Amino acid sequence: MGKYIFSKQTDNDEFNRFSEENGGSVYQTSYWAEVKSAWKPSFYMGYDGEKPVLSALCLERDVKVGKLWYCPDGFVCDLENEELVLAFSAFMLSEMRKNKICALVCDPLIETAVNGKPRDFSAVSSMLKSGFVLNSDKSFYIVQPNVTIQTILKEMTPESLLSKCEKGVRHGLRSASDGALFSEKYDNVSLPLHPEKLDDFFEVMTETSDRVSFIQRDKNYYRKIITALNGKAVMNLIYCDNIKRENIYKISLEKKKELEDRLLSLSSADKKDGKTISAINAIKKEINSLNTTISRNEKVSSELKEKFGENIPDKICLAVGITSRFGKTAVCLYGGTRNLLRNTLRPTHFLNWTRILESFEAGIETHDLGRVTGDPYDEKNPLYGLCKYKRSYNGEVTEFVGDMYLVADRFRFMLFRKLLPKFKKIKNSVLKKTIKSRTVKNSTR
Image (cartoon, rainbow, N blue to C red):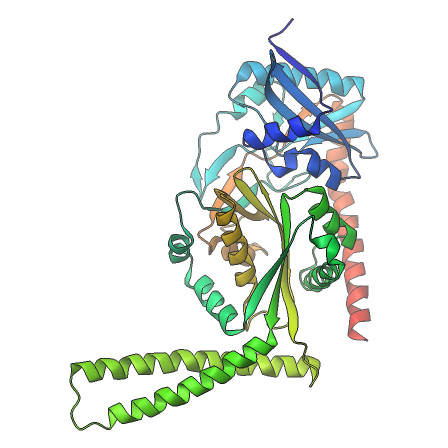
């Protein structure tokens, strides 16, 4: 008998606890299996005696040409423990043949480069020795691309991080302050008590989908993420408080008038010492700042009047997001913004900074802004702007090793790989037609 014992796990609490305490992601839990209800889950654990040393979530899907297993983010274990990885891979291969699975796909969290600088990824060697094959075509992936952008919070404070963010982030937060933006947060306990918030969330996501043509999920899918992740995910909704914003505008006008009168008095003095000159310069600087606030609010009022006429709501939802926090890592799962006031008040900046602040409060060390497709350094990449935006939060471009395959039925798996791009193309074509139809309907309302 070998050193390690592997078996299916029925105790989800132990499974999730092991994942969280050993650097696993939220995708490697029973919570995520509940979200991905179209896949059939199996939970495997490995033991060295009575000590748990490995966990793996396997999601099964019928892909027409056969059955496929997918292990999100790979296995939770010491991947440099070659003996453990070899033993578990052999065990899984026998399980695959027993269950007529053509291949197991995983995308382990093994970093190969950060900001273009290579990292030591020798941990992948144990998987290669175990029979896994590395996908060399990074433009082809079965579930998720291998590149993400992460902001490292460890050994940072909100103040030190903000100083390292690009100027546009700080400008965006100033815009949000002028526009009286605020955040509301809902979890698995509070969201069911406020179902109307899900309507606000879905409306913003739908508008975002119409604009950028990403796959829009069903409203219940977003609800399921919040409820299934059982306190490990929150929904943020960013609103503009129009009553407070109008008050900011009025106070700014009054303050500007007061400063202009004071400036006139100081400027009229026959003699101006150094102290007076410094006061004059400080007042001019403050007036310029107030002019920015006033001008921005006048533009906001104009946009709102054009959209709503005289019936401007007291508050408007402008941006939304869902963020998971598990262990020491946060992941931005979904996010979207309205077209309205998107450039004037920069609600996306406020949303993402709010997420980062909440991650600081939760003791998070790595804040993942989400996976990106294509070359993040190539300006010809259609998503280059998104990559650049995520990097503006002192984000690091992190490249993982990507898809790895353990194949039991080579013919069926190669057939699946060949057909997958066609399936995706058909799916995207249907998506674009749906979005176009929905946009036409919305424009006729």
